[in-house]
Amino acid sequence: MADQEARAVLNRPALFLLDGAMATELEQMGAELKDKLWSARLLLERPEWIRAVHEAYFRAGADVAITCSYQASFEGFSAYGIPMEEGQQLFRLSVALAKEARAAFLQQGLPPGRPHPLVAASVGPYGAYLADGSEYRGQYGVPRSRLQAFHRPRIAALLSAEPDLLAFETLPDLEEAEVLLQELERFPDALAWFSFTAQQPGAISGGAQLSDVAALLSGHPQVVAIGFNCTPPTLIAPLLQELRLWAEPPFIAYPNSGEVWDSKSQCWLPGTSAQGGWLEQARAWQELGAAWIGGCCRSRPADIAALQPLRQEGNG
Image (cartoon, rainbow, N blue to C red; front, top):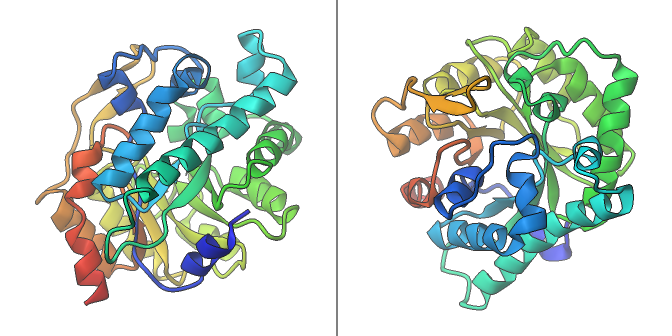
């Protein structure tokens, strides 16, 4: 749960710049991530690399570090022979690494105009565990009880490390969001954002309409923002235009680079990129009500650094 200083930051209107891709930076450092644990495997093998990536994003201007727990799950750890207790420690480690990076960054003094940095514990969808691209399709074909059993221990483990908030991200289905909201409500002091994938304006990947997304989440006292991530940047503005018909800001937007992930070959393919550049697109998202803006897959610290003018423009 958020400490007192972080809670004060969250309670006042502001622009929060998120970090960018974790896996891309780890690969640049030499990590091989072509397995089902993806970047979460580095919690076991190279935790210092994860800490270094978090710190690099803080230095680049990010206000929020998203933990390296997106792909982490007890089922996934078990497949690698990792018992439950050690899995809990790895979830807590993901939060601790981001906090350590924040502390190291703050030793140099918080730059003027920057809010107190936040740590958001990533809770990826059930589809990420499947590692077959389901987070971009949804409709898993499993009962609600399976989703609950999958997510409940992950959320509890992450919250035991006291992040400032949770990041329910890359969600394709409304049913999964319903389950996650119910789990969030088991911890009344916890806060979270809900971020969805989409393939076209008007609906999330699994087919639910944005009006239904808004009806579920908009105005909930524990939800700090709703919006979209891991979605082509050219779709963000149309999606926000539709969402604001049904929901009140603040919204969240952190698209991928525009490239497309091929889950079969485990590689990135060319796709649509942000027209007019990263900053110009982000200005449009901000005007549409996005107060949490950053990058997802294939974005890098330089992309977050390029968003810094939004801070002055938003406060002007």
